[in-house]
Every structure is written in structure tokens, then in C-alpha cells.
Length: 290
Image (cartoon, rainbow, N blue to C red; front, side, top):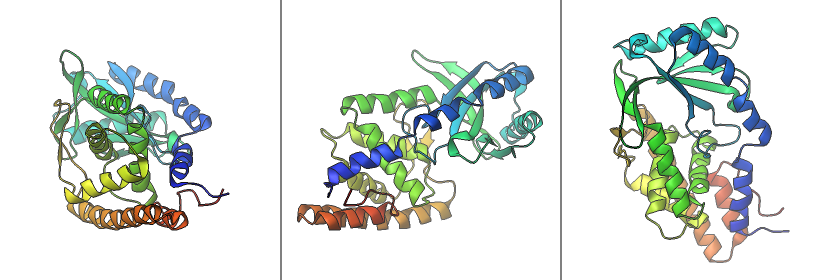
């Protein structure tokens, strides 16, 4: 039995959403990591951040991120040194996991599943405004940069609420392209850009808006994004210029395929539309027939 494109996106969303087993794996190592950091640094706060903490993770791909707020006295002016110090602490506690620095975090790959790959982001509490706590984390150049995870989660939640629960699925569809096509763009950048886009639309139609978000990113040439919540500085899309050029090249291909998918569906050539969506998502999009 054939699907419509809309049904295809709905089934795709089910595939992208982590299962109960994967979600349970997220909780597995939290207590032991927290106890280790509290004993070593008298940690102030330990909170899940990132896509798993905000309902925009991708099954099989998104790892788990925690912000670890440490006392300023336990940190170094050189953030690279701080990451190395925390890495040594965690490596001593979890010696068989292959702990490594993955700036701005320390990564602990507990198992083979992405949901067991845990990243700890050491942070220095800076201040708290009327609504949110502001921190500094490693900027990957030896210095520190301001972040406000609570504000950014609130921004995604607001966009999702304003668009009838369709902003977060749209974010997932954009992130899925990143992961399935190995596109070196920051997941956080994609989330903030897509949330901002969604707030500018009256209605979200997945097929149409996936294409529009991709086109928006391409037309902007992946420009740095000003923090929409005004709590930190610019949000950078890629770690290096080479990665940015690779991402732009893949964006160009994705936009072309999305346009062809929409044109095919508009011409009632639904099978062709599925062909182009499957190409865009590296054959991970549902097939035309159930």
C-alpha cells in the first residue's frame, strides 16, 4: 500500500525518535558520573543539556550531554588545562571506556550505542539574570565563552508550543539530514536556526519547510547566528572553514533534491517524490510502499 509524503514524514519521525530502551540507556551512567565529579570537585550543578535534554535527539546518533558546573576555584584560566584535568579525573574512575577530550566536553564512550556515549561539559557559573543561569565553557582556543543552556531550551520549547508541536519534529528532520549525510554542522546551530525559522511561519508543513530551512541555510552561506535569547555571543555553524565548505556543498545537493521532491509531489508523482526524499536522507526516509 502506498504512502503519501505527509505519511512518510510522520513515519520518519517515529523512526527518528529514540525508543524507550535508548531513553533508558541515557540514565544508566548519570549517578556514577555525578558522584565522581562531586567527590573530586564539589560540583555545584549537574544537568542534562543538548538534544536528549530537549526532545530533539536522533535515535542511534545523538549522544548525551551534561553540564557540570564546577567551583571557580577548581577551574583554570586556560580552559584546555581544565578539560585535561577533568578528563584525567573521569579516566581514573572509568578506565576502560576510553575517556577523551572532545572540546568543549570530555567524552566517555560507555558502550556501542550513541545514547551511552556521554559528554561532560565543565562550566563556570557566571551570573543569573531574572530567568536563567549563565555559564562559561571552553571555547576550544584555550579561553572561555558564555552559554545559557536553560534559555536555549526555553527558546526551542517556545517555538514548538507556538507552532502546535511541529517545530521540534522539524528540528529533528533537519538534524537527521546532518547525521545521515555526515554533514559537519553543529547540531546546536541547526536547532537554533530551525526554531527561529519556525517562529517566523504561521503553519509548518514538513516537506515544504524542510526544503525552506535548508534553502535558508544555503542562502545565508552558514553565517554565524546571534544568540536569539541574547545571553551569549554568536553561534558558530562549523569548527573549521574546511568543514563549512563541505557543509555548503552538501547543502546545495540537499536543496536541489528537496526541490525535486516537492515538484514531483506537486505533479502527483508521489513515487518520484519519495525517490528524491530518500536520496536526500541517504536512503533512510521511508519507502513509497509500506
